[in-house]
Amino acid sequence: MASRAWSSERLAEELTRLGARALPPEAYFHEVSARLRRAVPSQANCWHTLDPATRLLTSEAPAELIESGVFSAEAAPAAGQVIVNSEYLVDDVNTFAALARRRTTVGILSQATRGRPERSARYRELLAPSGVPYEMRAAFVVRGRAWGALHMARSADEPDFGARDARVLARVTTIVADGIRASLRHDAGRHAASEGPGLVILGPADEVELITPPARPLLAALRTRTLRETDDTPPASVLALAAFARAPDRAPTEPVTVPSALGWISMHASLPEGTKRGRVAIVLDMAAGPRVAALRLEAHGVTPRERDVAALLAHGQSNADIATTLVLSPYTVQDHIKSLFEKTGVRSRRELLARIFLDDYLPHIAQRAPLTADGTFAARD
Image (tube, rainbow, N blue to C red; front, side, top):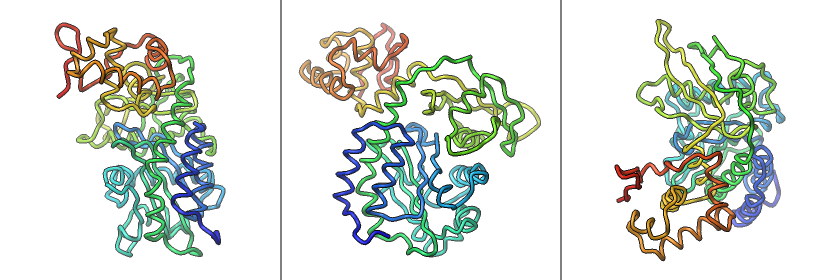
């Protein structure tokens, strides 16, 4: 452990500067861990990105857990399956989705279990067998949207996480959330040709029953480079979506958009008809359209009202038209447009549309400002 720990203020300053660099996700997580340990020591950290709409796991970065010997690269896929089960299939404490809903989005395992960590399925099945008795978790949320999550591990040679550790981590959760958004903005700029949609059918135990050729490069792009998986091994984001889809009351009705080495990938899960229970079909493709445009805007820190303005700009409306549609003053509309330009780093409407609404995708993304019968957007309450 470090003899002189950083204060929460020092950590916040360092992470704010780091977030402004817009590093790729794996590099960003590596740099955050190095700084975080100066304030909150740990044996290893494991990072995830989350889909801000569904809070599903969309990626994982377990390199530190492997490098520190918590588990091997060969055991990493099985460990990932335990994490997915803990999040979606069994009742467990401090799930990332539950933390994201709290006012303070940090949780310590021993506190959540009142000193009896064996109450946690994740502890029984993964942490204890791996020699990790102590765990602290966090969800990184800004403006009510969760962009990432963190698992911090300590060995039996170290003290358990305490109140001071939780306070320091809680101090920087929104800063890290902003950093993850900036990192995803970096990745969202990539474009890749697609062979068309791919299909993967998983059996009840998440075994691959069928895979089409276009699905293979998309699955490969979703895997972390740290893991040495076979071509057919489902990555964590696919396992998370399958687990979510198997619960009928929670099955997503729209595709989940996931960051990857190729850019945004869209995944849609459904339960095929048949006699075999637990089978899940997942269609993968390079993401396009309104969903990606909305994510690009959110990744730039755009507010819901600014998103409405951007949607109307892309629809070709003038400032006066936007003011009428949204029941705002023209001066307020101009302020929103100025803020949009500043957040997205553009200087004109044309640049804004080119940056956000790529490939001629039109702007029907403002779900709370739907189109009316005459083709204009309805005002929000």
